[in-house]
Image 1 (cartoon, one colour):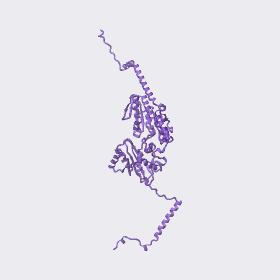
Image 2: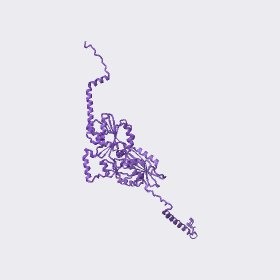
Image 3: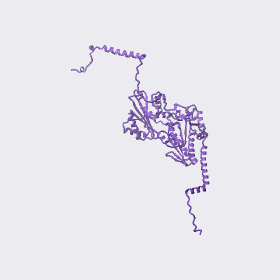
Length: 500
């Protein structure tokens, strides 16, 4: 009988199955969630354990707009890396971005450091080395990029970030105020995200970061610390003190104050090109009908290719820098097309091109062989610093004029020499500056000769000149009156040259 009894057929919905599982294993799942939360908390605690007080105060500051002005080896980039990791761990599926001056700098400064942190704490981060994006197990991502020109900036548009960190914010070649207002601020709205700027001071004491940290504009929360606050760099502090004792470092030098104290100290001697708004900047060049144009070209690919147009005239004593363009990753065909477009507008007397590299020389010879362009190779000497000094003399005496608002001025505002003063500091763009140097070397503005001006009526010079001119005129008239054609004849004719 029992064998013939049929068991009732029970149908369970998916929801009922899930509810049964939840009841059966609920306690175990709760324990696992608690363990995950504890592990996440431990990550935060362990990450913070390597930070000192000034770094922690900066990261934990609740202000959504904050800046840190620091010295070298102070650990500012290290703190930025921990800040980005903390944000990615705490906010599931969020997007953060680390922006350096160039993509290569972003990779060099923090990418390798993040890999070491991942290995140390077993965070399970996946690294995309091609795109410089690291992805966390919770779906959060950190993007590493540069913001060296317009093409880099365009890559940041349209995203929604919870944290943006700009490193070495005082040394960007673009207008970072424009970047913040037009690109980054809209990208932070969705997440009510934080904008963080960190840097050492620049020697020009200009720019958005200077206005934030020194002029206290735009309501940023400003933090500051130096290498002396970094407990992991006390050996460096001892080395600095030893160099001071030996006289190698001078604590009163502006460079020392910037590099080791993290304070703003302007030093024009560090600047490569030294111009003044009063003597060198103009809104428009003067009228003339005999302009001659020269273009300097600094070739690059990963670095920008730069074009700079200069104008001079026999009727003016100055060289005018009037037009410019620069772009990264330009192809040879694009460079050639750009040259031809400019040629239509300016009809250049000469076009001076950088031929320093092998590929640059190849491009120069290719362009020259298949066109009638007035191309010339840039004259390279072993003393670029000496040439820059000569150009600076023209800048100092007001011979060189620049149209206001040119990108060239943004380079000149930041471009400085290395610590030894033997070359330009590689952290700064110099592409338009080099193109301007080539154009200046080819210009013939120095051939201008000022026309003699007539003295003002009634002055002593006026009457002296009048007397001299009168004497010369009377002497000429007297010589003519003394000539007697009856005595001396009226001269020879062609017939006198032949004897019949």
